[in-house]
Each structure stands twice: as C-alpha cells, then as structure tokens.
Length: 116
Image (tube, rainbow, N blue to C red; front, side):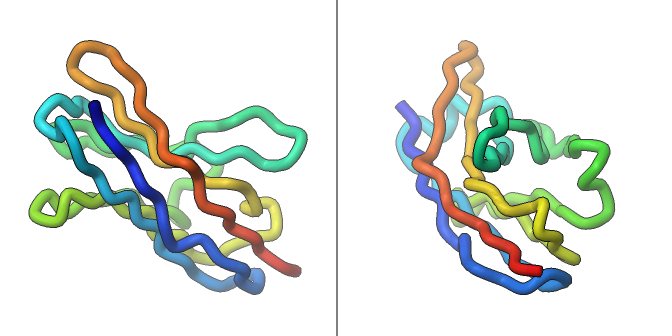
C-alpha cells in the first residue's frame, strides 16, 4: 500500500505562483510513476504532469512552460510548481501513484483557487 497526502493548495491571484507537495509513505519502493491530476467543477479529472521512476517528465500540452513537476527522493515527496496561474487553473489537484504491478493510489486532493 502507498499513502499520498497533498498540501499547498490555496487561494491566489491570477499571475501568482503556488507549489503543491505530495508526501508519500508506505510501499514507496513499489512506485513506478507519480503524477498530478486536476478536476475542475463539472469537468472530468485531467492529467497535469507525470514523473517516472527514472525521472522522465511529461506534461499536458496546455501547461508546458508554466508547471514543473519534481521530486525529492530523500524526503519521499513530489512537487508541482505552478507559475503564471490563471483562473482556469482553479481545480482540486490530486496526487497519483502507479505501482510496478499496475495498482493506482490517490491522495485526497488539495484545492487551488485562482482569482481574476
């Protein structure tokens, strides 16, 4: 089992920045990839960014250049640095982990609200 706890969500003005954190515990050795997803009201959950076990990163095309995914293995924590935030970035942001055996783990989500 893997436990994921997000933090860092907040209310911010358009153009501002936030850094989300995802603290990981449990069977960390079994994680193959981790990522951030988001879900806005009335919309489907969508991929924001992924970082693999080997460190390869992938981003949603619309977010490239503004968002950066990273991790600190010593702290067992993944981050999402979000810059130049827009009102359309308002959503609940979820941390996700995929195990080597294909199991999916989700955090509880953290709310990001961007005011215009």
